[in-house]
Amino acid sequence: MDKNPYSFTQKVKEELTDLEGQSDERIIALLSAYIRINGKLIIRKNKTIVTLTSKNGKVAKFIYTQLMRMFDIECHLSYQKKAQLDKKISYTISIIENAEEALEKLKISFLEGKIDKTIVASDDSIAGYLAGAFLAAGSINSPTTSNYHLEISVNYENYAHWLAKLFPKSKANLDEPKIAKRRHNFVIYFKKSNQIAYFLIVIGAVNSCMEFENFRADRDLFNSLNRVSNFDVANMRRTVESAARQVEEIKIIDQKLGIDNIKDERIRIACKIRLENESASYKELAKVFSEYFNKPYSKSSINHIYRAVHELYGRLANGN
Image 1 (cartoon, helix red, strand yellow):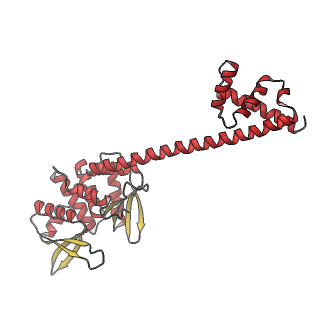
Image 2 (cartoon, helix red, strand yellow):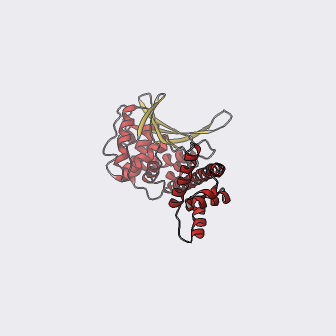
């Protein structure tokens, strides 16, 4: 995935944390997906504690703020700087009090793979759930690369299938994503650029979608221009090779018969014109013929004339 210091994945996730006017229904669904994928249960002295981790400070603060706003819980946000060379910071959210009540309201069961239908009962809540899933474990390649790839990684196969079936239920034209096993996880992914763009729109990352589409349009234009350029080069090469072959054949015709001894006027003039315009294309030759005979000649008619020249060369070469 994108390994830049500030990746496209980060940009998408931080855009999701800055969205204004999100409904409580959407936030509940978002938190349900985020905690279901990211959360870990700790049972300590008959007390349930839920911990959530993130490497993105804005995402951690957003989740913490929404939890505190939506529920009557005791929630702590802390961070730890890793000792490795990269010195990355890991953020931890701990739900200390009333965690079980929050899990019940969010319809989260870590033992079942199903997604509760009441959490994703509307387009808005489905969009929120998919946004929460991406915030928890999503990643997307930079649009500057030609390898389009968006994925969400989860721990359980059954849950992966339930989550994948949620995509086509959104209001956009999303297909059901593919699922692949990667080590101990199950990865839900898209590789088609239009599906990635639809997904970004559904979850509300409109600015990121516009950036993605701009890069995609630029790349498509470049590829189109490159194909045209390759086509032109190929045509030019064919023209040069064909012209060189015709010149050699006409020289042999001149040796064996003599150009002035050719009875067919068009073939006789065609030989002389080609020798005077060795590298000309059929389009350019058509213009010369039109001026010489004072009537219009097309590329097709020029091709027909030089086919007759080639046939004459073949007869002479075979001694006929």
